[in-house]
Image 1 (cartoon, rainbow, N blue to C red):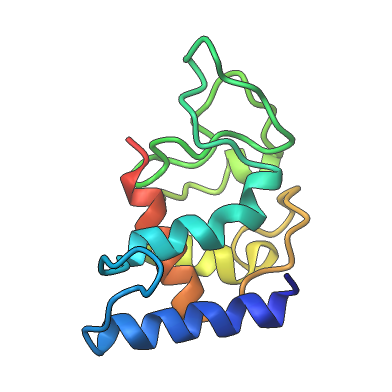
Image 2: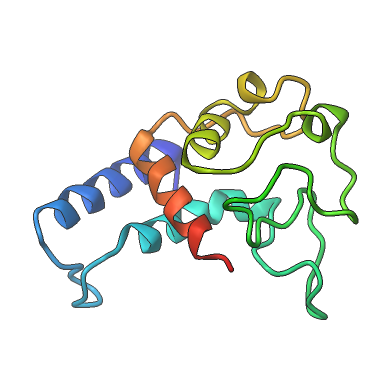
Amino acid sequence: MNRNHRHALVAAATFLYGCGQQDGDAGNPTTIAERGRTAFRACAVCHSVKDPDAPDYARLIGPSLFAIYGAPAARQDAYDYSRAMREAGVVWDDATLDAYIADPNATVPGNRMSFPGESDPEARAAIIAYLKTLK
C-alpha cells in the first residue's frame, strides 16, 4: 500500500469514527489507538514495541518505543543514540512526539532517524495514541 493510499484510509477511518460509525469488518468502533497501531506499521520496520528487558526482545535498527510516552529521549542504556538525541532534553509527550513524527530532523537536528516525517496530523495523532498504550 503506498503512502497516499494509507493516508486516505486513515482519513476515512477518522471521519467514520467521528461520525459514530462502526468498522464494517469488525463490527466494533475503531479507536484512535487502533488506527495508530495500523499506521505504526511503517515505524515497525525499525522500531520494536516490546520491552527491551523482555527475554523475547529482538533489537531492530531503532530503539524500542515501549513505554516511550512521558519518558525522556535517549533513555535506553543499551541503545547507541546520536549525540543530538542524547543532548536534546526532550520528554516524549503529545507535543514533542507530534513535532518529531512530523519532522524528526527539524525537531532534533542531527539525529540519525532517516524517516522523512509524517505530514498528516490525523495519522500522527493516531500513532501517538497507540504509543500511549505501550506500557
